[in-house]
Length: 211
Image (tube, rainbow, N blue to C red; front, side, top):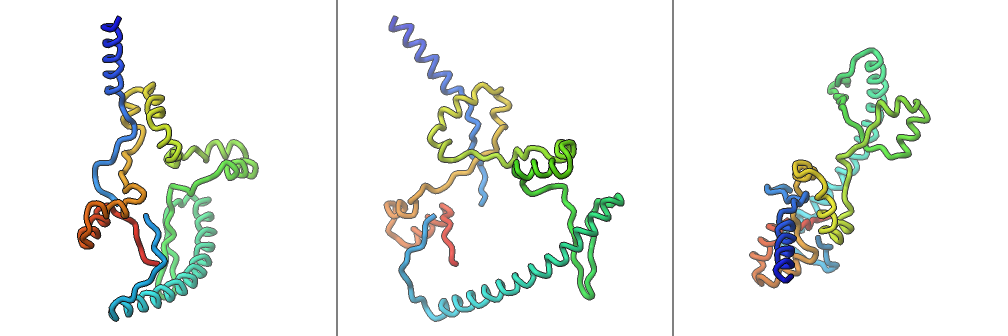
């Protein structure tokens, strides 16, 4: 009896090892903590750079707003012209001339995401047949809830074992790794040297930034 139980346990362990995880980790490189409320007084050249950065940032925001206003005017005209060209059989990008420069209206075979409400409204306005012919599921937009997946990881992997191995191997794009929450604090346990600590934070790709 004990012998049979041992064999069953060994068989179960082998089956467990043979399971294919669909959640592979990406092998190659690709591209957080909140800032504290205290302040630093940097050297004069850094203070000067901060002021120049803020000034350039403010100017950029001003010009960005102005550019957006003009862009919307041009875009509205270009969209109307594209609809006319499309109705006439021209489904290509085209240029619109200014007095001294020009813009290009880029035609793409892609759309922004549509909700169920968007799809229903489209069908109501343009017919069910048009909706069936022109709208499809965006499977690339599917995302797991990471919290639910983390809490049920083994169960999800187990449930997916019913799929053929070639499907399971290629169903998901390889995932990335990331620094654990609190990694910056945790890094202090491995070095007290600021230079090495900075090197570790950069290697972990901690997403600190200025704003």
